[in-house]
Amino acid sequence: MRRAGRVVREVLELVRSKVKPGATTLDLEKAAATRLDELGVKAAFKGYHGYPCVLCTSVNSEVVHGIPSAKRTLKEGDIVSVDFGAVVDGYYGDSAITVPVGSIDPDAARLLAVTEKSLHAGIAAVKPGATLGDIGAAVQDIVEAEGFSVVRDFVGHGIGVHMHEDPQVPNFGERGRGMKLKVGMVIAIEPMVNAGRPDVEVLGDGWTAVAKDGSMSAHFEHTVAVTATGARVLTE
Ligand code: CO
Image (cartoon, rainbow, N blue to C red; front, top):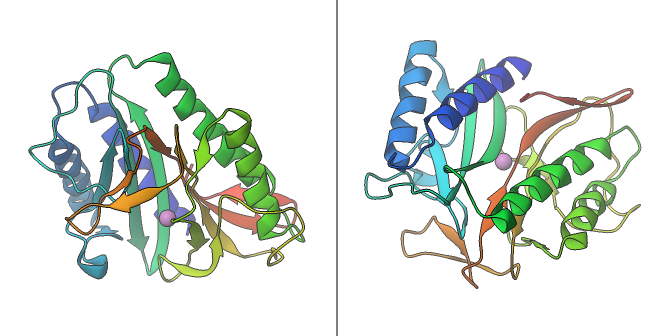
């Protein structure tokens, strides 16, 4: 799974380097797809329930599952969430980042920083004997202390020989509740954070989830293994 995680990281960092005003989200998709071809690695999302691309690119109030498009040109001040998964020798890696386009306003920058910090708080809660509620509460505390909200309609997940395995890994919860983690389990922790209300709706394309109140939304994700001493991040 570490090998899949390394490919995911490489491709996400390549995409990050292509984010600039004037680029389209399809340009990002093409860069990722070209690199995957060179590596001979299979993308995890393309074909998953009919999803058409290797990346999800979700701009501003789009929360997750935005479809790359030649019509979506990034402009200064936007934020774009890029989610990517790969399969290597049957094992999956899954990670997401939200990237500023040029210079962004301070509230948007704070949303990105807080969402990434909440992912790291979730990862810090991972160890044998900790519960899924410990992870969710760690994420939720960071997000809500800043006046932002955790999206409830999408959650993290177990990952291994499928992209989505049990258990579900919510980004909210109560300490001490839920399944206990054991050494060798691997989960994807993926907080989705709205600047405003948590409610989302899916657009007519059947994929793009947007914040109902139109507020900006950020998403960071890592694939994380439970080890004897804590956590190992497989997608860094
Ligand atoms: Co995921």
